Structures are given as structure tokens and as C-alpha cells.
Image 1 (tube, rainbow, N blue to C red):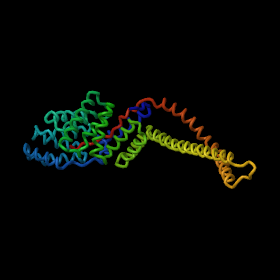
Image 2: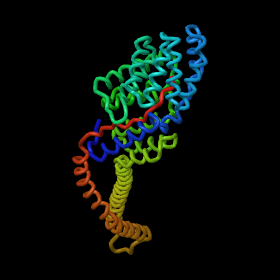
Image 3: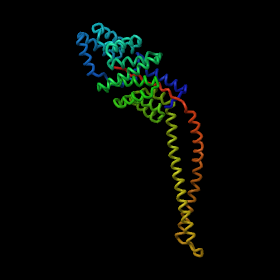
Image 4: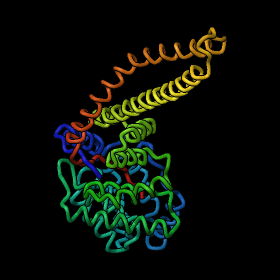
Length: 362
């Protein structure tokens, strides 16, 4: 897997990552606006569980969740704290409180509640929520290698648990796994996460974004360009898609397109050359045979005249083809030299750390 280590590319990645991950309040709205809505079947199960331990807190919990979905994280946190006081063993409220705090910018405090939720019950929702903020510690901060590794492992376990429960319509774990794997440059886990997204969420904007990143990893520039345009059509901000393309993807895609066009042109030229050679050989043999069989004392017959006329036209075509071939030959010389130089210039790596944020609703 080749990568590009240009300073310009790294700068673009940093700018896009910042734009996609950190906008007020808390996290980016643009990358989650097309995310699936809350799973109400799951919500009803949560309400029923809460009703068993704190029936009077169910409405407060619903109001907190409504505030959370409206991105009023401070009000959501206040209401979740009220529920937590009445239901101190209810892990769902710890997770929701942790998420509300983390999304409002209080990441460290939020993670402490997410850790508590995971300790109380290692369900997939708790695994993936904790994994998300281990990998996204806060604005201007980078996760440690150990936290990112742990985030990847938690996301993998969460994804496997979702799949085992046949709850494949929830993309959160796969998205967290993809982001963490990108940060660790783990090609195997990136592919596993992207494969899960493609299988279960083919129309999600983030799916096509990660397909574009994976294509760039594989140096399939035309596919990378195509996928980022699909992601843009599904809600990715146009300026972020443009930055991705301008980082070198579009240029390399164009290079390969022109390469294929040139290849077709050269192929057509070779076919034309071979055709002229074959026809010339045939007419040469026919002409020689005609001369050998003809009586030198007799006038040329209609058949010989026709043959010579066609042979003459073929020679004229070959002459024109010679001049047409000159730029093709010059192009081949330049292309071979240029491809050797380009090959040396392209040796390197492309550290794709670009990953949009996905707002969890679990």
C-alpha cells in the first residue's frame, strides 16, 4: 500500500479533519445531519428497563434525550443527572450523560461517565461510545497511541456484538472502527470496517467517504475521485470534498485518465501499423506473382492494372501514416522517460487521517 507524504497533503488533511470534527457546539453538525435517526425500538426497550428501577424518571429521561437530539447538550446533561440520581445502576443514563458532556466540549468528564457505563455493562452501545471519545479526546488534542488502540479494539468488539444481535442498521461502531484504524494506519482493520459499512449502509455519506480514503490508500485515484463526489452528493460539505480532491487525488486521477486515453491511441496506432504491414505484404506478394506469371511481350491486363492501382494507393496511405506516426513516436519516447521519472517521484506513502465525525444516538 503506497502513501504520499507531501507537506501540502498533510496540511489539507489537518484542515479538513478540524473542519469536520470541531464546530460549535461540541462537534460537527454537517457530517451527522444525514445519519440515521434514533432506533425507537431500542428506545422503548431502554424506557422499559428504566421503568423497572425508576418509573418516575422515564419522562425526564425522554426529555433529556429530546434535548440531546436537538443538540442542547447542557440541558440534556442536567436532565440525565437527575435520572442518574434516581437510577444509579442504570448504565444507559451514564452513557447518555457522558455523550452529552463530551459533545458539549467537556470530553474528559464525559469519558469518565462513558468508562463507568462500560464497566457497569459492556454492551455494544457502551463500547462504541467510549471508543469514539478515546479516539477523539477534544479540540486541538490528539489521542495517545494506547487510547487509539483501545478504541479500535472496543469498536471491533462492539461491531461484532451488533452483528451477532443482528442489529446491522446501526453504523456507529463501524465508523468509529474505521476512524481509529485510519489513525493507526491499520489497513486490515480499515478494510474490515469499510466492508461492514458497504454491506449494511451503502447509502451512508460516511461509507463513500471511507471508500474514497481506502481507494486513495490503494492508489486507485479515479475511484477515490468518484467516491468523494458521491459522498458530497450525500451531504459531505463541498469545500471539504474539494480539499480532498485538491490534495492530489484529482491530479492523479487525471494523470491516469490521460494515460488510458494515450494507451488507446497507441493501441489504435499499433493496429493501424500492423494492418498496413499485413496489406503491404499481401499486395507485394500478389504483385510479384502477377509479374512472374505475365508475358513480358503482352500489354498489362485489367487485373494487373487494378492491382497496381490499389498497391499505389496503399503506398500513398502508408506515406501519410508515416507522417501521422511521428508525433505518436515522439509521444512514446517522452512518455517512457516521463513514466520513469514519475515512478521515482511517486515512491512514498499517503497518510490518510481524514475521517468525518459521526454523532452517536445510542
